[in-house]
Length: 318
Figure 1 (tube, helix red, strand yellow):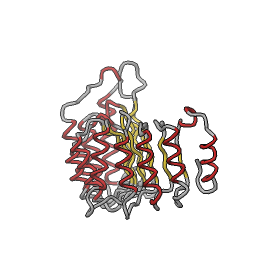
Figure 2 (cartoon, rainbow, N blue to C red):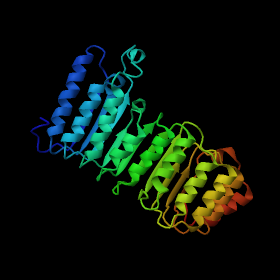
Figure 3 (tube, rainbow, N blue to C red):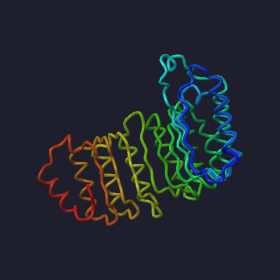
Figure 4 (cartoon, rainbow, N blue to C red):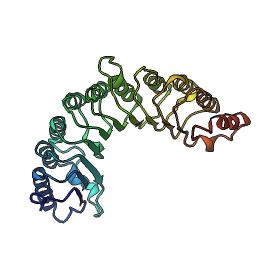
């Protein structure tokens, strides 16, 4: 049906029960991906796939082949699903032989793809060679939105990822979780440090497994202070910015004219940090939404904080 349909536009596949016949499940996935490779109408494809299948090098290569052959697909989402079958998740191979090469092939195919606009990847165990990813992405001309988890990319690899994405002129939105602050700082450098090739991204949702310090806040402030900053939505997970980080962001907000939404959730901000941000909003004319997460649960609103919120309430949702 996938090869002959002239009407189907969305495909949702769930393959998370493989214990009884893993080889049959794999062959079934091969058949679906091969047919989708020839399809001319499906624009959105979502796969919820068991750990067993999604880590199999031959399945990863089949997804790479899909990216090389399909010219209609605009959105691809790969969700990892722990199997519901007793015992299956406990016998998975942590690092299947050949997976790294297969993942590299997948990203090379992504770089050459000419239709995909949105890619959402759940498989955090794949790993990413940042240099390969960056080089591949620099060739892409259509990707607009990327969601990816990268636990084990190197610091230099994260920088090269950013450089590659900065060269994709269509690219507008990145949701990414890295392992540590060093990777985050390197990624931001890659995206915006090179004056000749800065990212035109509009949305950034970023976090790490460890808390992000004021160094990240200062780096983001530098981005917001750029004359041609294009960021409209900035969401930072689980930070420990403190007063210094909040003040750096507040100074950038006083002159920034692009940002409309700032979220610093699971916030490590102090009362003084919150006040610095609220004071900056009296000068900022474009921000419309400020999300401070659990800060309101941690700190009882003082009179000065209530007054600061009231002063900006007319044009900013806090």
